[in-house]
Length: 433
Image 1 (tube, rainbow, N blue to C red):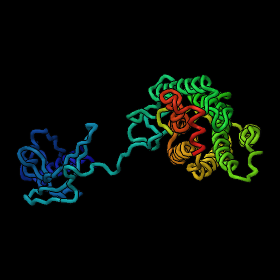
Image 2: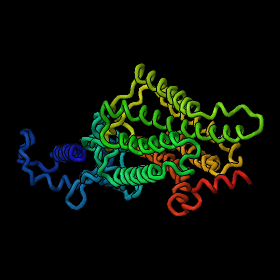
Image 3: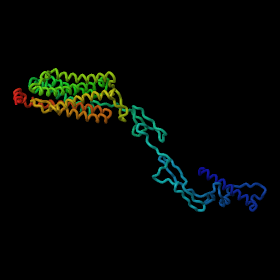
Image 4: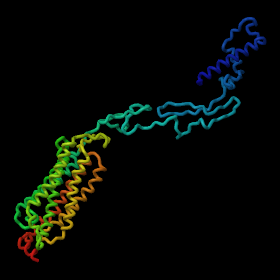
């Protein structure tokens, strides 16, 4: 029962009690001079009777007139105001007509406590709700994401490792800078083609190694820009084959150093293995194995352009799906196997007596090479989106630079700045000693 209904209820009962008092007092007052006729009571005639009304209503409460108003006691009300400007009245106690005061502490809602019977929680990160107090949230489509207020879905932006962004510009600049340096080294070696330091350890192997280093720098550019069907097919296979040629050339140069030393020993029959055919066979056979791995990969489960909807909330990452992750690791693993083999052979040959022994430089270059790719594996597995591409491009540039600087920088230093050391006479004198 509402307050208004309760007041009407008490008011009707008060009038009924007043009329009853009038009829009860009729013989004494002899109203209208005729006790046998019905009374025509005017409203003003009830005032004195209403002032004396005092009764218990159907709810068990006392009711009486006080200060010209009907009273059945006073309620203690706790008004609770909600953020949307609505309110709720909670009956927390009562003052009876006899001035008895009662209060119910458990019914009082105090400041700082919850004022509703449920908690409103935000939607999950990928869901929205466009109305307050909704029973369910709505999931955004895969190509959209919720705004800050989570009441609207916003289209995701296309993202990939672009040439125009700072990271892409940095990688491209590094690649072209070292490409130019490699071209300069090639020109220096061609100009001094017949000098002892260039002829040492097989000129052709040196030319193959420098060409593969040059192509490795250029192959890193395939990883930049928006992935296409052609770039996805070429970038991993081209990188794997070119790197295999480079590392197998290093392996062939290292084996050449060992064979030269063994051939100088009296009575040794290794001289017949010192021809260019052996070194070229090593490069060719090692490279063909990688070509075979890449051929199987491209014919069974080739890479293809794909999109990653989930790695980043606000972006759709356009990337190359490698098709078969096992084949990708096979390509990288084979390059690592060649590098480890070259490092092992060069390490044991680094102290062999030879005027232009490259083994010590190859050892250091392979150490850098292996360190870069060992660090690449956890970085590759822990990154997502276009950062994966950036990590791989950095690994290619760093390991390739290790080969270029460690093997050819000392030779260029001698050729350009110490030409007196690059002479056949010095080579003969050192070998005679």
